[in-house]
View (cartoon, rainbow, N blue to C red):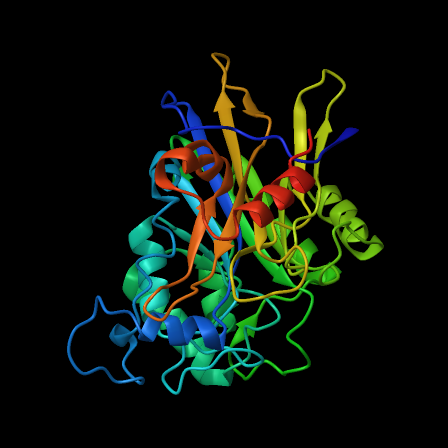
Length: 360
């Protein structure tokens, strides 16, 4: 394989329509829910009447993805790392996340149709969080992977195979750990181990799929370059047949590696970390993230081809006044339209981050 590192190559404007033999996927990083986000969602004036902090419908998340819906609508698969749990109240932020199910409902309503649920916070709320998360996803009818009710449930649901546009895509999801919290039995959180990877990939290969994607929670927080641990697992996943790796956990964007065959065609893609999709994190580089677009086509001879990945820089907009809420900004769209819609108070900060990460 020939490796090329693409730092940040962007697709500007609305994603164009594609023929039936093209599958278009979008991937977002970490959807988080800190205490400040809970407070802002609860304080939305769009929900009239007396509200209870224990009632999920008292929390309004309608602003979160409003700027990204046009991109979601043009994609067939929109996946994200859900870095919280959906346990009953009392709801809480870091370090033990438990969020109202209305957040998951807004994700699905906005167009996210694939949840990666295995990460270091999957066990934060114990059995209640795992049970509540699974029940929430099932009630919403959204495919999820990485957590299961039991071994029997895992055998039934793993691997997750989604068929769209004539393509069968297998999705696997792993985490390096769960912050030292034991997974409560009989639940399962998929761990990143050689035995697990080998078993899963052997099973996937028996399913005659067109593409294998692995969402992996790995790496060192706040590091903008991938470490040896990520690169070791990248090699192991590829040697077992994975085509695309979507990384999370560092909370900051890292490089995307594009591998090519001898003819120059894309053979594999690793997004080491997409960073945060939305959070209240304030550390350097945690407010900027990546929405990754990957298209897969089939030529007239029936040969599958992975297209060049396209990357969209996004930004978490935090509220500055009571009654405002968090949202995600598509930076290029904002910079293009800011002369018309007006500049945000943090315009210069956004521009500086955009210049730093907008490398080609």
